[in-house]
Length: 397
Image (cartoon, rainbow, N blue to C red; front, side):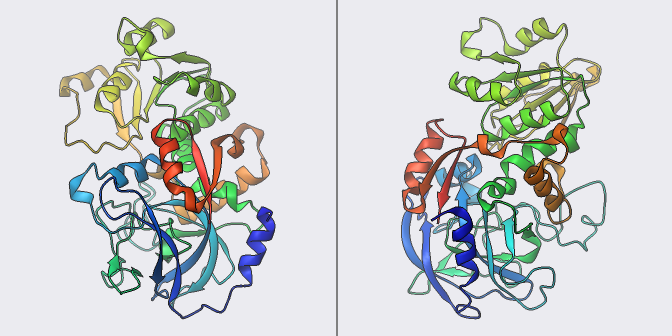
């Protein structure tokens, strides 16, 4: 069935409002264990919650890390993972006024309540209630789950979203309404990789035209950084990755030069110094590797270079920097969700991606969807990502 027909058909399903829904979900029962597609129960939304029918979801390296259980303190099983998706609201809980049944939405792992001291500040996109928290595995209202097995044993939530399920329940602060004319298939990418990469360039670093930059790790987030830099008029975009196949895709997204560390007899940062006569203006670490982070930091020009951390670092190791190295003028910062305030700013980003109103800020979302599979083949999709064969494998629920 064509995409638009699937979306319209979903609008007609109103018989489940206020009831427990039995549906299929991909449940992971332990670190590294295969996902099991099984029937679970999903409770109705409570106060300030919404229940969403997921139509499309994809897999991010954050899901991969959680599935592997690389950080023991963040483990919670059985669990429904997934955080990059799009769907249609099936029902809303008491108090939800900004959304209604039938609205097209994308979930966001870094929510926005709109009222707390963080949300009312222009200095951060974090939220006191719904900020990204990999330790959180239950709902905000009552500290319980909305998922359970058929014999009523709890199944835990993930990153405020849990999109590897035909239906999921989210706090309303973690759901963004988008234009109903937008392609939900494409808009699913705004849940994580596109927003994070573009925002790191536009908001966090505020890259200016004519700037030079290096991107370490050319997965979906790294290539979204490239798109953001291209749209800002960067004069040189250097991509660094050990997978040469990434270079083909990267060139289409604006990367001008490529470095494979395996081909070098010197450090990557030394090569970048040679190429740029002293270092790049900005570097973006998208690999989640501390040794790579150090190379990214040193690749920037002393006096003004800025390194933005986007990679997820599960290791307990500390930053590989000496404090005195910061006295050379290089700076280091992290970003969550590209410093976008999700509820406030994501609808506008969706319109930009949908309409291409300003060619200088246009991003081609189609380039990021490299594979599409039915939901039942989620284990195959994880294998594609693990092997570095996909950017985003879109799963159809």
